[in-house]
Image 1: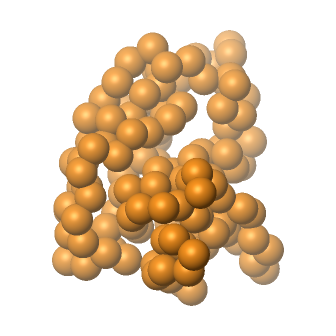
Image 2: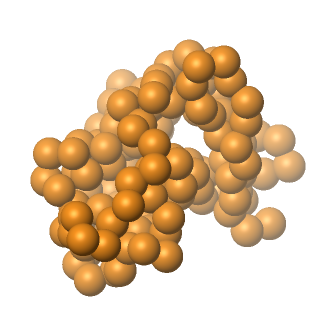
Length: 138
């Protein structure tokens, strides 16, 4: 099974279920799912790579911290992620290479303002591979 995500219905917010063969897959698929709400992937070029390291006390917190770190990269550093490659992922630490480009107001058309990944109904587990459910505050 390749990694993937699906959009799920949630009152007033948006969410995804990410699936993959490994934990690394679901962390990458969750990032791709969140980014799909924000901007069309085909509008972003992979011009630069930025290494990100995120730590938390447990796996669920790591997923939330990782996704919120990507939002920080976009909102504070004006860098639009296109795709990610998870290099290392334990229950408490993630290292990933994020490819993308600086925000270009002439080319980038943002769709939805995702404010944060939340702990609301957050789940990580095994179900025919790995699965993660994440709700985003918009």
